[in-house]
Length: 340
Ligand code: PAP
View: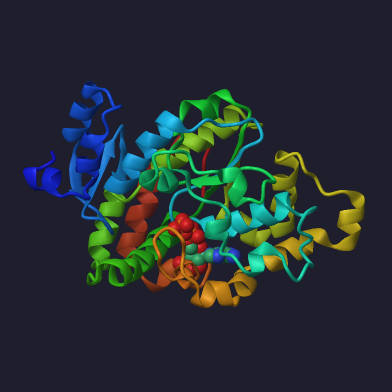
């Protein structure tokens, strides 16, 4: 439950939310009584319709649901945090704009702009702006490319009603929790002057599903089921599989987005060119990603590039922890056909 201090803080989510007169009274009352707990980066996160959202992004999600109008040609990159969002954004951008920006071009936008800024996040954008951001303008008027961490069930209604396409990327939960913990600690220090969140605390919350946009299993299963029922709407990808066979999955993405590689492009090595440009090694060594700052949080772009490895969890999780997460996964995904 929200406390009076929450409501009095002028920049708090609750304060902003209650000020927004366009929300029905009923919704305001239901938000005030949401279950709440300490966030990983923000002071509070709220459990809204089964998912934990940081206060700021709950506000963004509600505004987005109210104002965002999907268009048939929209492409939305969907991920849980730390599942490879930056990589997928780079790949989708390079893939869909390759006619305007050949990947061999010395002035390619990915060489000077963070993938995070080339494809803005929906709920982040709405969290700070009442009016819809011009997603088309961000992308040079070419097309609307957006991203979200929201679960399928919390996406604006128009996303389901339009023919827009969703690309979902998931990642092994053991590497994800480790990546998340490193990222959050750097963000806590850089943006909020806070100390580290002890790893056992983060792990415990993650296993309970109390991580931003969690529970991870419900998030993943929402998109997984939709990808089976509606394969033209949702393409479901796994981080580890892209690492293993990048060309195969880039071609899958191209086919899904209805921009398959032509024979000529195949012969000219465009597939390999995109993969090289978007690789961890290439992106993480660019000046913009080494020293630049992100436009939303103002954090260092290099926080999005740690090591990009599969299996780094072995350096952080005890055997007991690994077994516990494996058991959660086994139990939650039983009978769904999904496997990591
Ligand atoms: P976000 O969800 O907060 O936007 P996201 O990009 O998913 O962030 O998280 C960064 C992770 O993706 C990091 O993983 P790590 O902590 O295990 O290293 C980062 O290294 C990895 N990453 C970033 N760019 C790439 C890339 N081009 N290829 C592979 N992995 C990448």
